[in-house]
Amino acid sequence: MEEGKKKDWLAWLKRKDHNYFIPFVIIVTTVVAVVLLFLSHNSVLNWVKATMEVKSQEKEMARLKEEIKAMDAEYKALTENKDSLESFARETYHFAAPGDDVYIVE
Image (cartoon, rainbow, N blue to C red):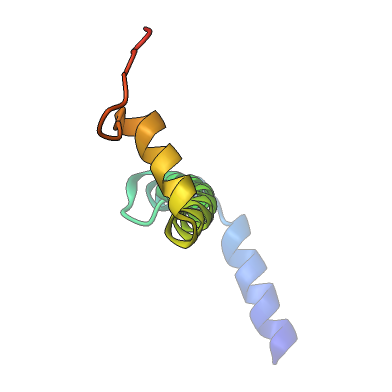
């Protein structure tokens, strides 16, 4: 039975009045592929953009985590030692102890 169906199919394709079918299938397949790959909401272009954005965000997260570690270390150093806090305040905010002469050189 399989062989009979196969012969019928091949005979149908060889008939001259159905020559439009194969180009039609190729055109429809091409149109569907273009729509799915480039024009739809879940297109390949959107997927690539999203992948690049995710990678960028992951890099930013890693950079911010390193920055947080550095800030935590600085915070710990400033809270444990009064002298380091005093020198930080003097250098960063130009604080001075009473009676000190302050000279700012720019």
